[in-house]
Structure formats: C-alpha cells, structure tokens
Length: 87
Image (tube, rainbow, N blue to C red; front, side, top):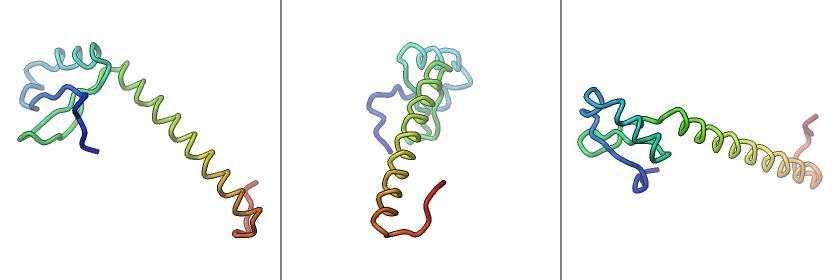
C-alpha cells in the first residue's frame, strides 16, 4: 500500500524537533502522520485516538474475514470437498 494522499507527511528529521506538534496534527486530522526519509515512507506517528480507530477497523476486518472463511469451509464440507469439520 503506497497511497498516502490523504495523510499528512513530514520528514523524519522533524520528529526530534516537533514530535508533540506531529502528534497534535495526527489528533486534529484524525489520521496517521507518515514519516519520510528521502521522500520515501519509513514509518508513521499516530495519536492514541487514531490508533484506537485503526485497531477497531483492523478488528472488524479480522472478524469479517474469519466468518467468511468459516462459511466457505462449511460449504466445502457440505459439498464433500473436505473431510474435517470444525467443532
């Protein structure tokens, strides 16, 4: 994934000088601030609120993916394509 068009970007050299400002930017914009070295992303800094939002999205995606895989496995079992059924 390399689409950072919606995110704020800053050179990593600014981090020691203005880490609080960078965190405030993340909090204010509600998204990560992408850290760049030689114009290439090397990391991200996020405020706690943003981290919680990202973790919620990740958890929902994992739950949806797991449920989808279980349903696909049950279909395969019913169709005789697999021999082991989950408990």
